[in-house]
Length: 220
Image (cartoon, rainbow, N blue to C red; front, side, top):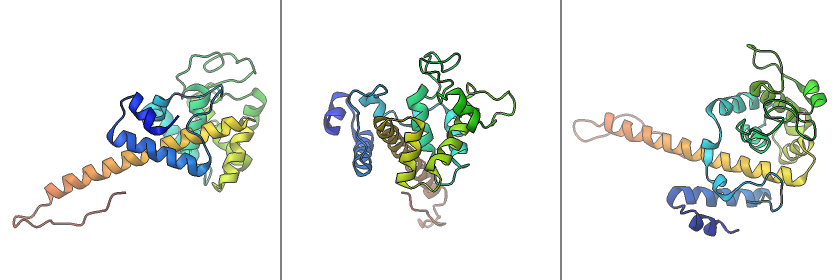
């Protein structure tokens, strides 16, 4: 499905459409498709432009903090996996908040018990270690990805680490596609914040003689 068609169908215009186009360019460069036909976790065109609103604030903070424990691992990759596995904890599917799914996976990051036991990180010191605790699960996922090749952040290493997480090529493509979408959204948000701060500084530091006072930082 072409990006222009997606924008027309959903009435997407302006900066949002531009962001989606940039996402498509990023995915083309990395070899990741916008949509993976027939994939069990395929996401909708509207999800491609939902941006960071798709991630609860506390999950976003945990993704970012956990990624910092592995040099080179981007938080967007962790968020891509969390989105695929449990819609960032929003899913009510069996195995996300209690019990196991059909393959025996548990928690919002969908760990098999033996795998979680191997990479478990007790990130939430206020509770017992469990794959159902999202903070523990996210930090454990970061540790697993790091051990499986994500350290250093090379394309080959990251792709290999995601494949080790779930042995399916479509899964790797979809996680990277979601990660690219989050990267675009984060950059757009950062640029907007930068421009807003610059706008306020311009009016606050306007000299009496009509001259600007103070240095200005370029955005972008």
